[in-house]
Structure formats: structure tokens, C-alpha cells
Image (tube, rainbow, N blue to C red; front, top):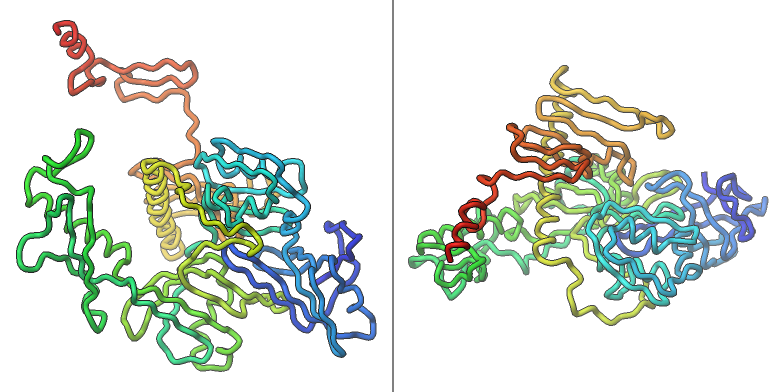
Length: 500
């Protein structure tokens, strides 16, 4: 149902002033960019069209929920219909919530949003745990979140954005990988394909620190996909962190022999191929309406339900390769409740509004290298664990007893949540993903270890009890044999110092 609230009606918890019967109502959502809604309504005898005025609020279904609010900022009227153009109500914060001097310091994403939205009708949620600092002086909330400024939340904390009425969701990633697959390479009017080969590399000539290269007349490493294209794409790549022992500093690892250095270079090249350096950048603009009625339509029908940020596994028929693309833009039919157009490609950050500052930030706003690498490593471990546990839940549907799922889907229930357990381990979740299509798995236990947002414990100890940390009292004990300084236990270290 699509309703409208007149400008002076702010009681959005109840029905609006009028139920509309539009000719069309479409919502376009672009990842980390502007969302907008366009509604066309006939000039009807009942006069419903008269309620479609600037600053009125339209309530319409979107992938984010059945009652999503959009404020009209412009209308156009002709002899047959009136058209309204509207933005999510959260965009009101560009005008009515100014951060005079707000400085979240060393805060996580959730803590920063709480500070930025304080004393307002707006709120935010985020799963970003990295502590970062930003200063907002005389900036509106929209600009502070994703304006083209160095201090913006997206620049400082990173993340991807969803809107849910007066709430903004900024998570490390939105959408999910639900196994959607589609095959492209057909000459179909409803699919526009863009293949960019400019950055493809299928042959790497690796160069280590101090100019060391692979031995022989073929000092390169080839991709497994080297024969997938009409020509070989060769590029020299420098690995300055791969060094011989004589070139390394005290805190760096160095190779004792050239053979060891060559082996490391080959490994690094193959890692780049695994990451997809040998794949073209391919994007697809899929018009579901244009595809309707074609014989191939059923092959792409699954895209009608793809959500913003979702991963789609795209197989290119002619090239014989498979790439992973994300739904970076969606045009949604709010009447039929399905996708009309989907753009699949690589996500690129952009700012909300061209009126924001255009000066580009020069200094990096990322954490130190060690923190960034660790954060990526932790996310990679969690992804791998969840993939394995998701596999067992899939198997459970086929083989009774292999894995089990226990869930309570009632948000009002004290037992709301889900647990999947089986031969590979268990997963526990107490909240859904922002798009509501899966559980947000944050705790996993497998034979290889535990991954969790928080582990509450009183005592961490080894099996013998000789080394422990009592978290309740703060007492910490480490045996002298285990506590090494410069490869000596503490007693040997002290004795050597006394002797000198």
C-alpha cells in the first residue's frame, strides 16, 4: 500500500492522510550514493492527486521494508497526471541537523553515530569496531556521513550505507552472498555489458627489493587463465617487502638464499591471481522489463529479488570465466514489489551531493598498516568459518541428522535468535542482517577456534594451571620458562644482565 502524509502530519506510526493509486512508483537505490523515489499519479476524480505536494511524505514498500518514508522535494503536473520526486526522510538531516562542533574521538562506528545523531530524531547503527577519530564543525549530518570531505564517516570508518526511515545503517558491508548465479554473454536487448580489460594481468614479472628477479630466460609467473584471452597481458610488479637477508632491517624477515627469494616471489604472484588480478572488470546493466517475454528470461528471473550490495556470480559464456559482481544499483517497482533494473559491477564510493566540498583529501585516513591488515585478516577468518558452517546447514536440508537449526523469528520474543550446529561446529546469531534475509552470524565455534564479538570469561589458563590470567581479579601469571626475553627465560636474562 502506498500512502501520503500531508506536510503538517508527522504521525508516521499510523495511516497517512490518503491511500494513493499511482500509475507507477519506482525507487532507485545506489550503493553509498543517493536514493530517490519517483511516483506518477493520475488526475483522478476523487482528488487524491491534490495531496501530492512539496514537503508531503510518501510511504511505500521498498526492499528495506513495507513502510519506507520519502519526502517530496519537487512535483510536476500536466493534463493527465502529477509526478512527485522524493528523497528518503533521513535526507532531511541535511537541513535540520547541523553538527556545530562534534568530535568523536577513538570511537567505533556505532559510538560515532550515536554521538553524531545525539539530540535528534535520527539514529544510526554500525558493526564497524575500528576506533577512529573525526571532527565535524558546522557540518550537516548528511555531509558528515558521506560528504566529499576528508572527515566524513565513510572516509574515516569506511562502510556501506542503507536507509531505514530515520535510521541509517553503516556496516562493513551490506547485502550478502546468497549463491545467486547468472550466465552472460548472450546478445540480449535487456542486458548491456561492459568489459574492461585495461587492468588485466595474466603474466607477472616479479621484482623483489634491490632489483632481484626470477632466474632464467622466462622470469615470470603465468596465470591459470593465461589462455582465456586473445593475448597475454604482461606487467612488471614490484614486491619491495621481499628481501635478501643482507637487505633486511632488524625487524624484517629476509631470505637466506636466492632460491628462497624466488619461491616467495612465485607465491606472491599466485596470490594476486587468486585475488583476481587476471580477471577483467565486467559490469552488467540488466533491464528486467526488457527481458520479459524472451526465452532466456527465466535464467535471469532470480535477479528480481537481488538486494543492494548482494553478490552475484556471473559466468561469461564467451570468455569462459566467472567473476563476482555486486548489485551496486537497483531500480525497484514499489507497486509490483520487484526489481526493474539491476546494475552489477564493482562498488565505487561516491559522495551524496555535488554541493558538498569538492576538495579531495590528500592524506590517508586509514588506520596504521598493522591494524588494517589485522582487521582484514579477522574478517577473512570469519568469512571462511561462516562459509564452512553455511555449507553444513545446506547439507542438513538433504541429510537428516548431519546438522540442525533452532530459530525463533519473533522479534518480540525473549528467545529471538538462531543457532545452527553440526559436525563442522556451531553458529549463533541474535539479530538479522540489515536486509532481513539472513541471520547476522557473529559467533562461530569450530574445531579450529572461536570467533566472536565478545568472549566473557573469568579465567584463561593452560591445561596445567601454571600460566593463567584471572580476568575477575586482574591477576596474571606466566612461568619463567614460558616468559622469554631475547630467547632467554627471565632468570637467564636477568643473570646475563647482572654479569655485564
